[in-house]
Image 1 (spheres, rainbow, N blue to C red):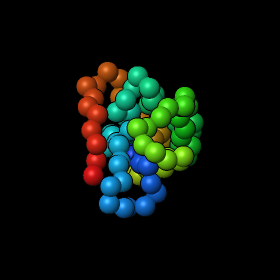
Image 2: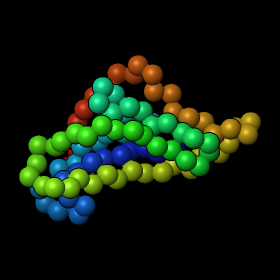
Image 3: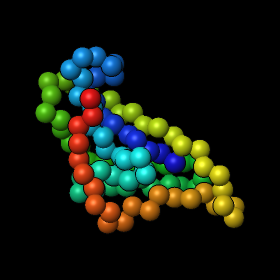
Length: 94
């Protein structure tokens, strides 16, 4: 399961680097109005279609970082995140 994704203005852990969480620890989008939840194709592939967006930074590139959590199959199927209409909060991570 893909979870804990962030977007940042630098790929390095530098002082002043801004990180914004976009996928939470449950694998759900923090900003569902602009970033849909992750879709899974089979047990080993996940993806997301995103329209272009901008950060309020002076850089030409943004960096995405995500964690991958290995899950056990239950009755021959991998459990998927259930995101639905959960209340979500945006936050900056330092």
